[in-house]
Length: 234
Ligand SMILES: [Zn+2]
Image (cartoon, rainbow, N blue to C red; front, side, top):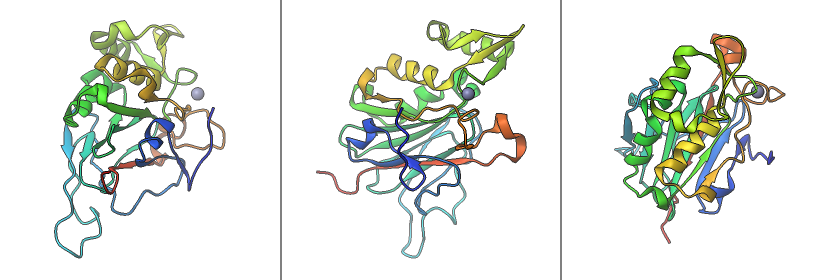
């Protein structure tokens, strides 16, 4: 498993080879100041980040974040981000590096189709996209109950083998990153452009290296992931 970290961020080879600036955060890592974040609500709305207006603005900090769980950027160098603590962060880029998206997918968002919405919002054919799946709650640690299992089965029955595994009575162990990767594949992304280099379990990876809501409860911090379109198209 690849564990190299740059400034507290983990880069996935499938995005790295496109020259796209991005990172999955480890605990405390700070993305570029101008990164546009969302007010995440475990829903299925996607928005597009617009370049900051006016000369003196330093990024999005003064603006109210949009309520959404996926964000697209097609502005050279304008980074977009999402925060997680056990939910799956997915970073997406077009083959030319000119379009990117960041998607926040917990079980609720997955069950509602947030990955499909986020991919669609890029406006690019899935076969022309690369996507990386970051650190999130995995089957070793992430126990869910019957209603969660049922909600996922409605939409993804064919993808749940080995991903949603019976555990204690009326409980299941859920592997969020592997389910996310299967959904991306089903949408038409090419298998070797789906990166899983950094989908370690946020709950049990020692250190602890990641923030985890399941491990720490309401006091858990958040991991701040980002991705930006390349600054000048070749
Ligand atoms: Zn674990």
